[in-house]
Amino acid sequence: MKKIGFLSFGHWSPSPQSATRSAQDVLLQSIDLAVAAEELGADGAYYRVHHFAQQLASPFPLLAAVGARTSRIEIGTGVIDMRYENPLYMVEDAGSADLISGGRLQLGISRGSPEQVIEGWRHFGYGPAQGETDADMGRRHAEVFLHLLKGQGFAKPNPNPMFPNPPGLLRLEPHSAGLRDRIWWGSASNATAIWAAKQGMNLQSSTLKADESGEPFHVQQARQIRAYREAWTAAGHTRTPRVSVSRSIFALTTDQDRAYFGRDTSQDQVGVIDNMRAVFGRSYAAEPERLIELLRADEAIAEADTLLLTVPNQLGVDYNAHVIENILRHIAPALGWR
Image (cartoon, rainbow, N blue to C red; front, side, top):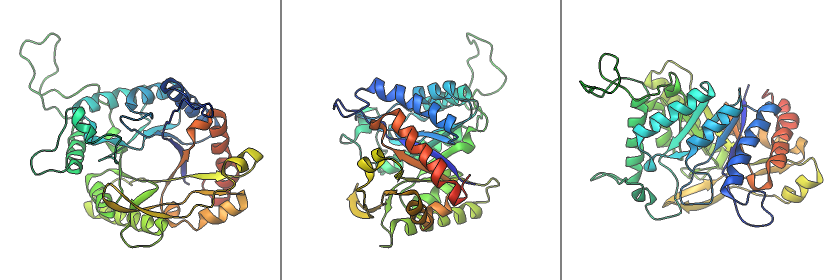
């Protein structure tokens, strides 16, 4: 069985053609789409995080609101840029949002992608230590975050507190038991996937990765997933890890689908991002029978247990619910995913 969710980048634009013309539109529609996806039977509602952009940012108010409006669907991110995060404050925010949702948070974190401004994390008060890169800093923040999520006391209590303290060292509150096992690392390379496995995090692999062999994107991504699982086993972790991949997939079943995506003939692309040669995965848009054939040939989708559908959020809630329903109804059963 494969879990299927959606991933929204949360764009907004004042353009008359956009259904999301303001930040408020995006936030409210993000909640409504999660409710609709849950009603359709989808498994997850995930949101991208970008700073200094007309896109979703500060994820925890949104995650908490979605948690309060839904009852079953997983709620996550893909991904939170840890270069911008205070790990201690983040533990409190994440614990609150997870408790509101009843333990449904699936937090994707990472060192982040190229941002809208130069060294934007410095504006948030963070900078690499001497000898560190910004990527090193993001991983360091992540390690602190993971340690704190264990819920162990570390802070010496005030001998004259305002309120009575439990005995021993104090931890951050509220603590949500089990959240530590629901943290995912967004990895663009084989090396960072292996690092994530050693840290005991689940793996998120997106629609791009470092071009490490010149092979098709899905082949390289499948190899990354296998390397991750081997490293997980070697690390001696006792639970079974989860792996997600993201894809843009559109089943063409209506004239509107064909008008939007019927001319999509995309293929893998190679480019340079953040000084890294990267391979970008293709989109899939076809009639259901043809789409099933194409997806069966995608090695990385076969390796993963969770598929995240990147949705065109600026087309509105109703159309994106239709996109999700198309996959659940026409594609998933034929591939044995449900």
